[in-house]
Length: 413
Image (tube, rainbow, N blue to C red; front, side, top):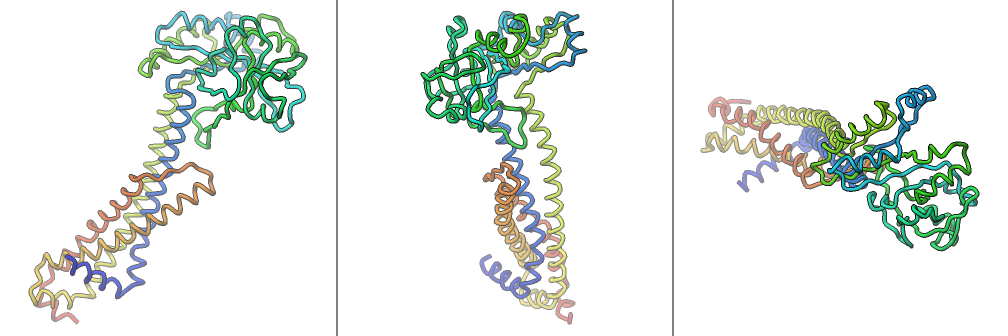
């Protein structure tokens, strides 16, 4: 076999340019397959990282803004929008729920903050940081007693704290509208993993200020006109299912509870990250199939090109085949010779294609700012495909060479 490989290499090097051009199609095909797999794997990892941030067991209920006409119809059906009462109803109505956190966005401004950061001010439940896996770098998060006593305290996001400099540390105070809040904690910088293929919008906790829930109405009433009836309205409720298997049953129960309490008014939206992930993966599978088909066609074209070259080579080397047969070479020897030459061509194209594919993946990641990931599978698959293409497209030319009549081959000029 070693002699066969050496002889095949010498035969291919006789026509270097023809050999190089014949493997070009394989190079393009392998490069396309590798790039497709790297992009698909990167998108998959990005979606999974987002789901990890959102919580694999979490269910999000978000308030929907209504037009004036829709608000009138909602009042007629006794719907008050997403409300603190919904939290109580959900808590008492389901055994599949482990924890409930809630949050309300407040229209207020932080007085004297840096122009680089305009924080979003929210009032939240004391367990919001635990549910969202937010880490405290200094001090503490909001406690239950802060909400009960309506303590004027706050927790700053990392960017907000840094923009305030020395005034952004625990123990210092900030002014929100006409109220002064004592800083009791600062969040650790939040690595927001939301990219081009984000499955859901993730809040930028680095640029947020958290207040205790009990202070929400007082803060908001200082800047807007309204009544205390709206003080218990919520922007977002996060429900954590007891385990992953209970998510679907929890979602069905949430829908029934909210449909009853809201009088059938759809002034809320239920978002299930796991369901979004499944839909995202389904879309990406379709995308990968399309890309894989295109890459496969490139590989097919390259394989046909090599088969065409090998058939031409067989025709050129008819006399050589006749001489080898005359001195004792069997049909299997001839098949092996041409099959090895074809496999060497495709494997060479596979190796060059993998190197070029890694370069193209880096270029895509750098220029398009897409997340990509090269795995062992993404390297082995195109290489194996190129080897299989060599065997498949080399069999027919090898068979044609082996079936030649030795006498006719010797007479060939």
